[in-house]
Length: 122
Length: 107
Image (cartoon, rainbow over all chains, first blue to last red; front, side, top):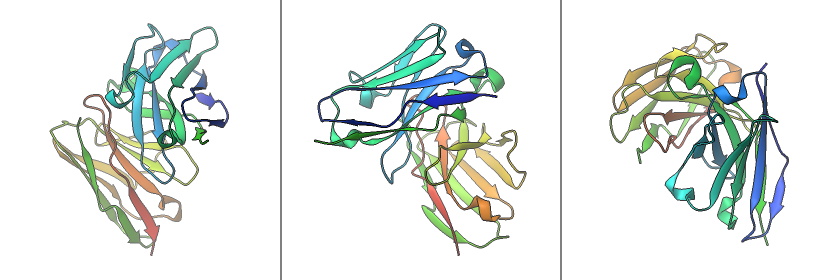
């Protein structure tokens, strides 16, 4: 069965960086794009970007350009999201989500990781 | 960026009620519209993709309709497990924006 297992909670100081991992299993890792979505406490969902695990191409939301880097390791079927220059507003749960485009030709997020809480506090 | 606006932002209803949640896009998105359900402390769950296609395993009381700038999610007969927050999302172009959410509460 498809599973996306994310790394644990992190506490970071302002200005630091955080790297969140998402390990995929139960499907062909390189066949499905992966997205990152975040959710601040009590707030809605915010799309951050997408990575193609096959060729490692990425597209980031303009809001995060210059601060976010998405990478992958095909040997371990893991994608990573690194966010730098952290500020208090980056406190949120970060999710990875698989893109179902491969199945029915349109983007939707059919499987999600359990979420990783990143807290930015001095 | 395409702005997605849901209405209402919150809704009180009873078990057995029929409810409809609307989602409006700031420009035409054809049928590139998805619906998710989220319960507290959990990841979102895909309900409907491409405006009207039911995700595998989702009960048939959920349905989606619409195209262009206006779409709706309908729950035909609310069950206790349906009380949650619902989000629409456009997948027409990046950034793949979400609506602000509709919180469905028990009356």
